[in-house]
Length: 217
Image 1 (cartoon, rainbow, N blue to C red):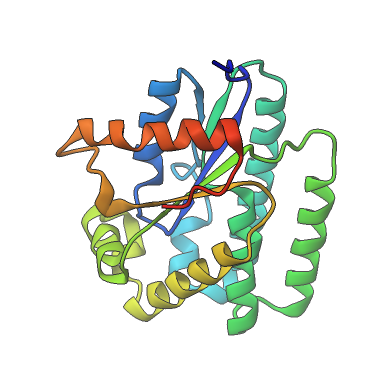
Image 2: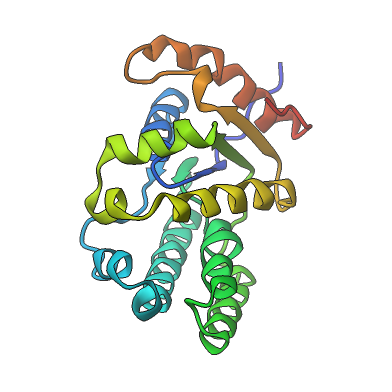
């Protein structure tokens, strides 16, 4: 039996409110990995952003970019494996791109942001994931989760915004080839009501990490 390398980086991606943080913690616990969680509490721009996209989107994206780069350096300096809540690729491939194409991020800001992103991911401090887990579900199920979570101003954001983001996520993942991808439907497990349901998913993740072959669910 092949022994799994000790140090691996798994990124958990997907829509706002889809359950990435809960999934990240559960997976890290079962693999005995450390977690890298998205820093939302204390973010000085998040609430302002939901009130005025145009005014604050660039500030928010730069803040997240800096935080993720700092996390990348921390991960790279540790010998343990990590499960990461949200990938840096979503910031540029979904969020920044969407606001630029919607006109809520200026061309100058978008160019500055993408230039910084490209410079960061090319540094020796940046580790690409060994596996990206994409959590997905129906649009209705995804929006229900956003509403049920009830974080800040997300509940007051127009449904049309989440519909557009959902479509862009689906488009983004179809063209993502930076590392192996495993798609997991949120209907296939329930970490709150049926914690044991995660046992059916874990072998898929371990197999994908070991083989790197396409095993998309």
